[in-house]
Amino acid sequence: QVQLVESGGGSVQPGGSLRLSCVASGSIFGIYTMGWYRQAPGKQRELVAAITSGGGTNYADSAKGRFTISRDGAKNTFYLQMNSLKPEDTAVYYCNTNLRGSGGLMTYWGQGTQVTVSS
Image 1 (cartoon, rainbow, N blue to C red):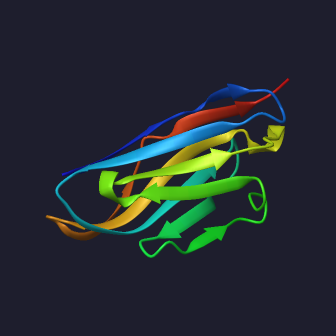
Image 2: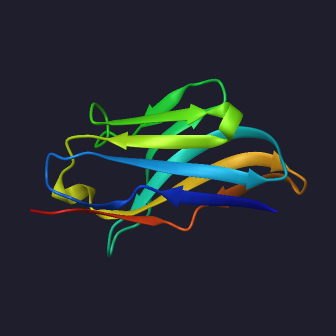
């Protein structure tokens, strides 16, 4: 069984920063991609940023220049550093990973962490 546990959400004023973390635990043989998604009220879940096992990254246009995704392969942990936050960044943020575990190649989601940007 694989679990993703997120941390680091909270409330911040516009222009502030937050760092989200996601730790994958369990029977993990290899992690292929890790990503952060977000879902605002009344909107569909959208990709914010993703990183491959080789270090390649992909960002939503709204995140480019402000957010940075990174990973610590030794710890099965990945991060989303969010700077210059805007009210429109308010959403529940979910981490996501595609990995090979005892059940084969599967996709896992974290439980979500709330990010609120408001003055």
